[in-house]
Image (tube, rainbow, N blue to C red; front, side):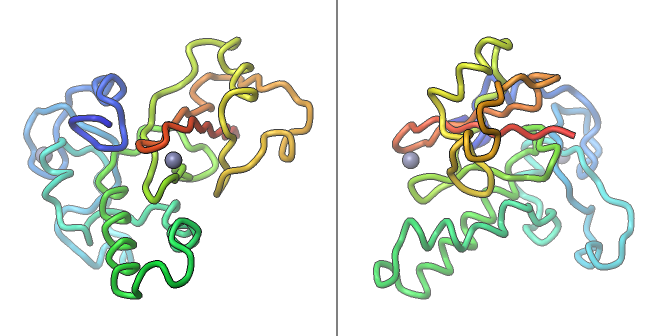
Length: 191
Ligand SMILES: [Zn+2]
Ligand SMILES: [Zn+2]
């Protein structure tokens, strides 16, 4: 669990560079995250968006100013599979939903999701992003050790058959780990 961002380990968060925060206009370490300055209607109107914020602003910016994450479209299903019917009241289920959406929206968009934001989820929570494989051999070995993720836990073979995991760029592969059971996951998205 990262100290700066719950779902990004600190070594990866530390790779962010200094820039001007689009929200507070200060020179700070900035992280990629889509938001709007203060116009909550932006997402309907299409005014200019901001996409580099400092860690402080990411924490304090109103939730409504942060872009919805594509991963949220699976959130209800993720929650329902972790908390089967009858195990959580409607109100608590709703609270979980909002809390988890809030936490993900306040997480920088650092994994390179070329086919869309698809953040792994396990044990009732989003997983932590660990970075990319060290090298090609490490990528190939993932198939045997980590769970492939695409909108949910799946099997690599069902999507890719016996194709070797050989990304053109290691950035296409994102490694994650459950904060609770430590199950490792990976996504592979390419253009
Ligand atoms: Zn800022
Ligand atoms: Zn887990």
